[in-house]
Length: 369
Image (cartoon, rainbow, N blue to C red; front, side):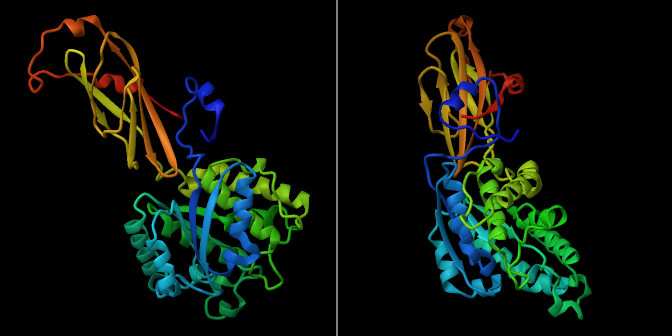
């Protein structure tokens, strides 16, 4: 279920709906772009910031982008590595040179993959809870004419675009989310060819193209339907803006899992066991999380990963675990019934008698906090 709720609606729907993700609406999400002119043309990161702000999402963005640069160029640039080492980036966006992902296989393996892996390692070292996003670019308007004679696979747009898509999908597997600008452009070229996505050079994005790219990033980071965006650049035709939003909804929002969105998000889960009388032990089974918050349903809370808790009196308690990994969090709840008989039972050795209640796992459900 793809959904985002904020404010009062969260509490109204809490008991009814379950949801796998959200983000911390009160914090600014920090995004770093490492790329080239496909990133900075038409000030695309600013467009992304304005798009997000129109829906109440705050973004703090920094970029190091230079015309014609590859990931290898960035790796050899101390500024690119220094800004990553600053840490506290929720997302890093990596973009290879436009022709790079369409290189012959041997060149791709030698000139791109090693540097993608180097950046991934560096980013995780200084931003262990951050998420990497690959900026999936597009085929050139009429293919790569410069390299066509020696590499026929890039001689036309659709062949070049498909090769770029396959390469980025392979690079992202189990490592990164994808912002699929290329597939959105492909959809628009097939069904709305009257919208000009390119500048006259047949490579760089027009304002419409950059707007589509910004909406892709917004959708990936927010997990929200881009159809509801109110912002558009003043010079962009309103009808074209509407068509682009619908295209991003169909290609990106309706297929978030295809682009690895949510794959690296926190997932809260726990089981529990009664230790002795009214004392319980809680086993945290969450994944992709760095912070935890427990609410035992009796006014007591804990930040311990695997807490023990004693209930003061019999009753039905709703225990909730919130697992966090910036900028997302996920909650999981289970109901525990503490009976009078537990208060009257004779204490025994914890190590020899533990009344495991793992059958309660099936009763738990993941919910939006």
